Length: 136
Image 1 (tube, rainbow, N blue to C red):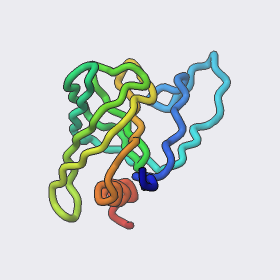
Image 2 (image 1 turned 30 degrees about the vertical axis):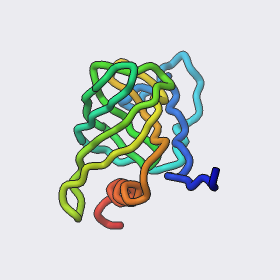
Image 3 (image 1 turned 90 degrees about the horizontal axis):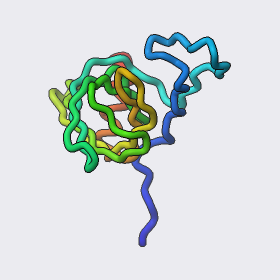
Image 4 (image 1 turned 120 degrees about the horizontal axis):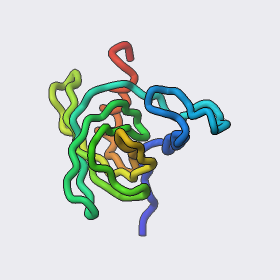
């Protein structure tokens, strides 16, 4: 077996379950500030998630980074579930269909956080530029 080629930088730190999507923290937990390894960008992208457990789940990406994304959706997969992500983005190159492999990192009442575990280089670069914004 040949050497493994990394697909993307290290995964983001999982968000503390005591922190609500609004950024408020539950009062009964003492937690450290959110210490992500990669920058996140707020967005509203439609995503299709495919898994062997639940078939197809559709949702809206609320924030995204090169290491993961949060998907607002009604149906959620169990933590640790592997899945395939497909989302459409608009970039300088026009409309782009981005695909990645992910793992459910955390589940909340309004959706789930998914860590990107595999992403080809071209899609990684597209996602990196999208997160960095138009000034990059």
